[in-house]
Image (spheres, rainbow over the protein chains, first blue to last red):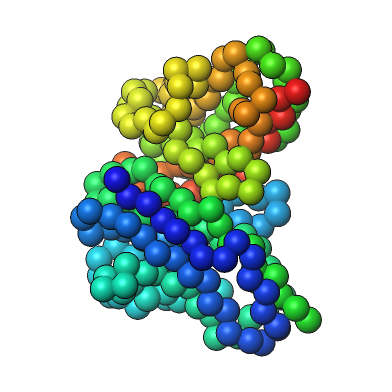
Length: 113
Length: 115
């Protein structure tokens, strides 16, 4: 079975500062990994995905994540935070050929002006 | 393209009642998955439908059932509602094996409150 742990349920950063949201996964086989963003009263939007190609993955809105097998991590970063980045972020894992996503509990990102 | 549409957006039920939630997938998608998102939690997989059959199921009781129609739209039914069923119910559509390509799109959800 696969699982995801997101460290820090709330993260606050100043506008223009580095954003770092942490995600560690557990999987018995090579996983697919995803980051989703959820704005208030909305569904989930895919930010980026890792599906066994390049380990450094670039997504939308300037976000990127690096797959580190040795650390079983898939942390999300953005060099410079913008007010519009304030939202809930979810890391998720699935197995190759399996259509089920297993989500972490989420990290709420607050941007300080 | 309307994307994934869900109805109703909000509803209130009482314990013991039954509820039906509806989902229309994004144009060109034939696979529908349902997730339950309790307040402050990440979404949890309920089940997935493809070719009008349940293909995968998460750890949810039989009170949760679904259906997929020939036009690929889907319904989620919950019987004998409990207070703990209060949540945002998300529908996601994709082509078959859409996770491989990231082509999994979520609707905005149906928020169910059970009193």
